[in-house]
Length: 473
Image 1 (tube, rainbow, N blue to C red):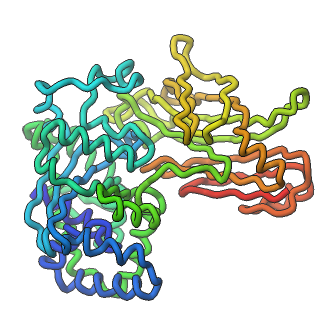
Image 2 (image 1 turned 60 degrees about the vertical axis):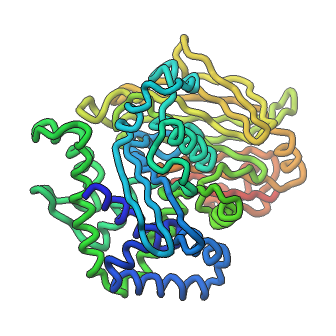
Image 3 (image 1 turned 120 degrees about the vertical axis):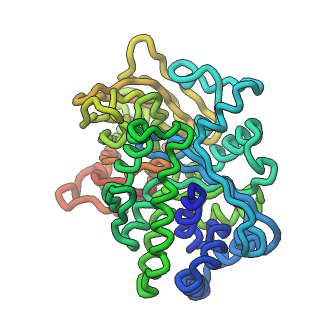
């Protein structure tokens, strides 16, 4: 029963070609629904002349030979840089349109078996606040899904996971995928509980984190309840009307755009296509400027579900030195109270800027904590650990000098910024105030009329997907 969660999650992903194994299985099991869906997808692919999609379908469907995929079920109520805590995982192999093996398990079982293997030192923030050694469950430390997947796959091999040496594709999926499916199947009842698109995440967490104690279920089997839910959803997919396929495809595309489904492949040619499609969850370069933050919930239970984040990015020119500077002011508002899934919010967070950005100062950490500044040649990051108590608001402030190529763009009269959303998150509130000292000729997104005619660019809104800004001076 447990393995069916793979099938239902990958049916959605498979609709646009990112997980052919489950699609092939589903075609066999539910041919009326999915054969029509595949035909619809093929027609849309041809209509849209999407060569990148067409190029990777045969490989991911196993038509060119066996394809083994590692599935990471990412819990975004316990956010990690790579999209969420890896609570469960799965492995599926597909060969010429047939699923030859399916396996899922809780990550704690794999990590427990690795206790006698050579220890791998964890990143310093994990060592300082959570663990003394690095495990598969904590492997998605990079906010770039490709880098994160490479590390996860490395740990999966080190911990001798099933078919580890055969894995070619890594797929990350958040609970939003399951919630999206319930839009089309309708609510389902399992073991006296009614699951809906609105409550599936919270109710399922209570089932596998709390109820198993009362029911006398062994901890290593507590996630078997997921299989019953998945089985019911799978059964209902047979009855979805073909008239809904267009809407389903649109929702699946949005899951990719909003970074709730990400795919990495070890084949450079396949990966190139995934990058071109925007499915691989890469860290994006600046245009030329860039801002992004990546939280890592460290021992805070499922507290991310009650955290509200707002960020202000301000650009000014120092009147004395003439230096162009950027200031990040970030507020974390904890709207919850202590309960079985909520506690004080403890996070190690990194803010990302273009390489060449110079760190000036920052505030908001406890006195015993220190800022960690890194520049890998692609991005400069400023990281630190802090705590937000229930009912409180915590403020972080970071001052930087803009990178020389960003200053050059401003001087040339064409400023660009990409505000990237962390993998797996629902978004954040953003305010941009760029005091350029000259009139704005054109901007996208546009300013509100109240700001027309001044010497600054002002924008406020909710960032739910990566957002690009362009300002002509």
